[in-house]
Length: 315
Image (cartoon, rainbow, N blue to C red; front, side, top):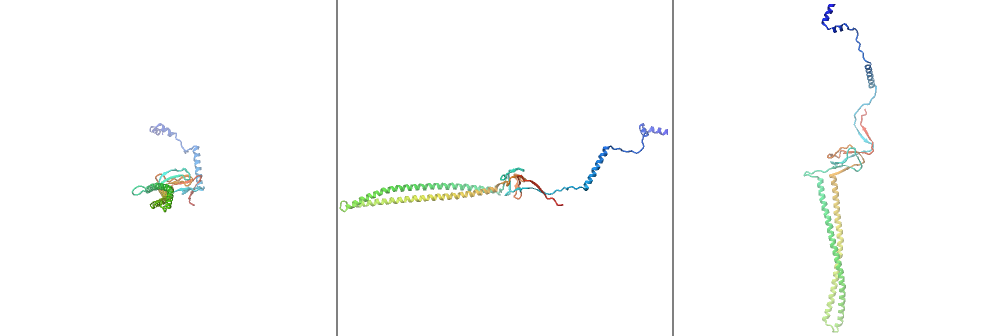
């Protein structure tokens, strides 16, 4: 035995030999701290409670469904009257607007194959016609003014001539009366032989000549009065014709203005707010196409309450 022990001592270190001599025999029991036991117990209880709740509890199912947002007051969808290009957007998302405010401006003009807008060329033609018509109005007014001045001068001249002739007639009547008186005297003494027949005939011719002159003056006066009356009548007619002509030209100008307004509306027009409220669902911008089938924006009335309508399945 001592021999074997000596052999072991020669083969192993002293520490290993001592550890082998002090070896304990029996079952090994692993000891755990109290905190670990408490944690494990709590975790187990939570798992048991969760399993029971999942098996017997009621809970809502999460489902994605479509829906819309509605207001208790009707909202206004803003649609363009004509398709075109938005050239000026004056509102932003969430901005408050009043009824009648300009929201945006749309250009609806179309280009020709040769270049240039159709409406623009139409407006150019209307402007040329407008300038021509305005020139015709000025010319008609000027002609009427000249004609009125000419006829007024003619009336004044004829009336002056009639007054002058009236004065000459009065003098000529005196001459006729004087010649007639002398002739009557000569006729009384010619039979007695105091005056020759030649002198008698000369006196008679003088009376006839003065009467003829008086008749000519009266005829000229009547002609002057007739000229004055005719010129006066033409004056009223010229004024009436001029007013009618200018009125027709002005009517033409109004028609051109209406046509111009229509074409300008076709080239570009403003879209205004139909109601007062707040801009939402803004779906356009400067340079974008505006379609009559798609709303540009929605205006929610001021003070309106918003609610969601969901299209959820029944089961």
